[in-house]
Image (cartoon, rainbow, N blue to C red):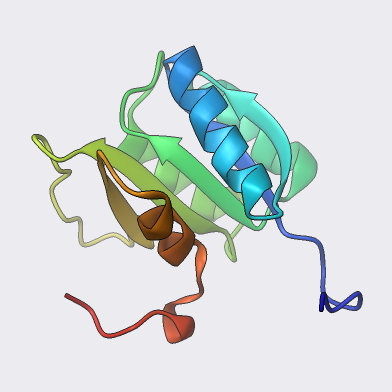
Length: 129
């Protein structure tokens, strides 16, 4: 049963590769997120965030323009309550940052279940591994 009083879950997707954007958009829709827009670079993504005020940003580390770390920082400035999932290759995971990096780092390749778990609020996820 869906709580109709809860705000609709909305997201913006950012990835330099079109296939990655299509995959992330499809997974978000599968989990009942409204995808407000897709961007291939940081500048376009920030414009979408400022325009649509989504609940979630799902960004790949590989962007056509800009860096994923600066995107996360600027996105949080634009939308402080924004949750951020950063997708990265397992062979090159991002370095931890002290300045409030992403909420979740999802390493590729990942299973659909792992993506679904990344969407959960921190209090709903199990213990950290």
